[in-house]
Length: 211
Image (cartoon, rainbow, N blue to C red; front, side, top):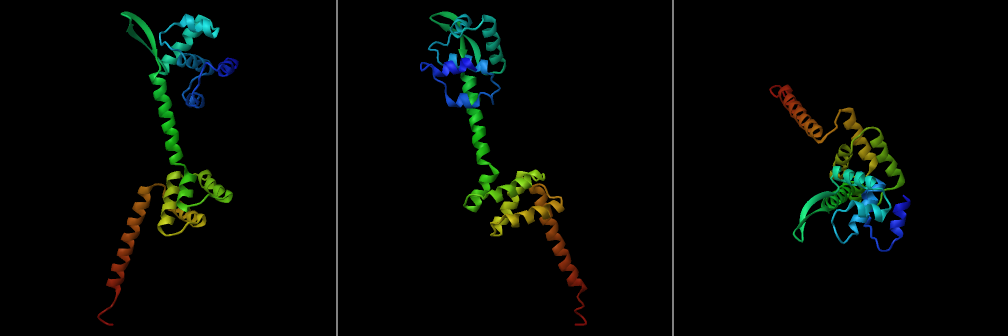
């Protein structure tokens, strides 16, 4: 960690916040991060492990292990390229940037699907602490985000923006074993069929001859 601090203090080196904020997510160790920061800031991408070791005050074996680990994780790639008609090993950081971009996209998608954000969007206001507790209570009781969002949609369709009403919907669905959108559709079909059956039964039971 002290090496990272020293690198950060050195104004000649730049570290993107995207890498700094996501390196743990990408399963990159602190020591590997130091190597990546070093590589990103080099004007040449020629692979020279001995030079890396000298600059970072690391043993050559340590550098080789770290580079090998980054390659195995598909964070970097070592490729053979011709430079001035001489075949040389170069380090490609394209995989690193692709993984960071993918991680950022996942975060954005997660934020877009944030359960509390969905409620605030539908209600057109910020949720109160009590409302946060109610939603957390649903999750703690095993109700899925999908089911909760469907209950919110059902309430909105009926013109109600009230968590108590949504809680009743979730409770009734729970008693019927409803857990997914398909379960809701099947329940509605069954309800509709039962209603039609009852109407037909009432029609045939009606003694219109003796009326």
